Image (tube, rainbow, N blue to C red):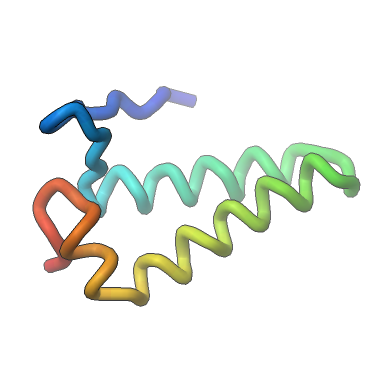
Length: 69
């Protein structure tokens, strides 16, 4: 699985929308490869948090490299 290369802009890491989508997919795929338990649940919670952030246009505009599209 290729790792995401992150861009550093103004001393603050900014992701593109596509990178965040890819990160969420990677979290879900990794979680599915684990046995049920705390580590798997933690990865699923991260993916769920990312999904919730995607729905927040204000957050996307402020925190992604290009803003929401």
